Each structure stands twice: as structure tokens, then as C-alpha cells.
Image 1: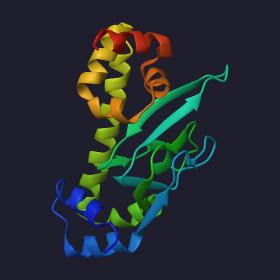
Image 2: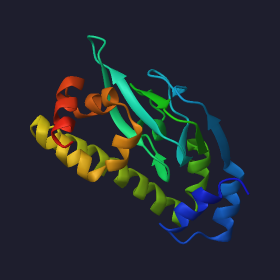
Image 3: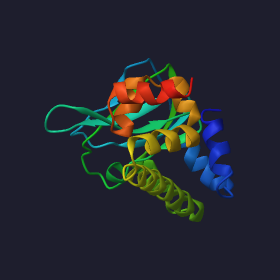
Image 4: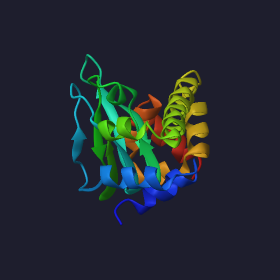
Length: 188
């Protein structure tokens, strides 16, 4: 069955009725991607959310000077959910696959259909809450010194340091590669 991992993930959040599962299964697809594929570009309206079954992805944008800024990283067993996509508004960032990845997708249109089920409302609230806490974590992180940002992020997301390049992590932490390398070198 397509999407067993997504169903398992969702079942841990809410009790899923047989009719919900039937409707869900009719709306999900598997998508395989190679490294460095852009699966969504700035200016487009995201039409679906993704569950990372396996792989690694990130979202990023370019500031007015052309500098790239990483917004988020996504690992296996995580949902990639966009407020703007859900609201059918164009987004201002790119979504890039970083390693060979298998994503389970569900269109936002299918999600609207699923909203007739009570469990869908609970799941959507959970997705919104998760996204909110990710953004809150990052906004608080940016109030600290570079060293504090590095230590806090390394402590809370050690797996990112195994998968992402120094350039991408530095971009996420809003510091130079050299500064991040120096901070990482102190721990060796």
C-alpha cells in the first residue's frame, strides 16, 4: 500500500477512521527525487504537502542582494507543510531535495476533502502547530550570539550536522562558513 509510513505517522497523532483512511489513500502519491532537485520554486503556489519517508530536504530563499538563506531542513518522518500552500498563495522560497529521497505527497485539495472527517481537523492543527514551533525556534535562535546559535542548534539537531554541508548550516544559522567552521573546530 502506498503511504504506509505516512498513515503510521498520522495514526500516532490521531485515531483514524476507516472512511478517513480510504479517502486518504485515494489522495496520496509517492514521489522519488534525486539530490539537488528543486521540487518547488519561489513564485509558485504549492499544491501539496509532503511526508519525508526517507531522505533530506531544505527550504531556502534569496534576499534582495542575491544571498541565499536556508529556512528549514526536513529529515525522514517529517511533514513539509506550508501555510501559504494551504491557503493557495504563492510562496517566496524554494524546496530542494538534498539526498535521494522518497516523499509521500497529499494535495491540499485532497486535504480540503478530508476536512469533512473530524480527525483531519486535528491533523491540520498539528501540522500548523509543528510549523509554528519550527518558526518560533528559529526566530528565538536568531536572537542569540553566533556561538549560542551554533551550540543550541547542534544540541537540538545533531543529525543535520551529519547530513548538511557547512555552507547550508551556516546559511540557516545566519553566519559565515568560516565562523561556523571555527566554532566546530573548537569542539574537535
